[in-house]
Image 1 (cartoon, rainbow, N blue to C red):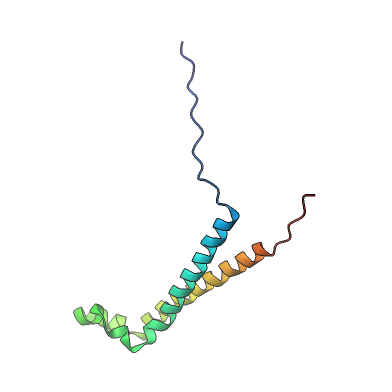
Image 2: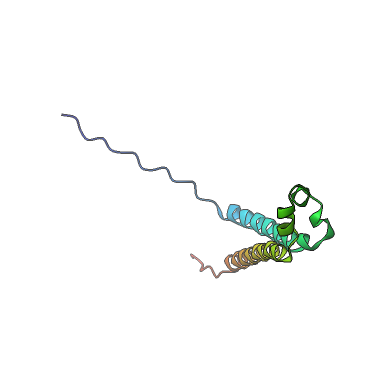
Length: 103
């Protein structure tokens, strides 16, 4: 008789070190804030209509140039800025969290 085979333990992703989490958090903050600021402002600039969407389709041009659609895009920008601010607060809380001494 053969002995039952033991399945190997599942592979776990490596845990990130504290500085790696901080760098990734900082990258998220910068990226989300930049995208958010762009999406918040760009739909209201005059260059918004100078692309292929309004040129190729009159139906899409009506939607593209609509202030409601521009408002939705700006709302996505505000959401990105909110994510950046939330991540900033999370990083600050973890940075200034009270850590008891192990001595």
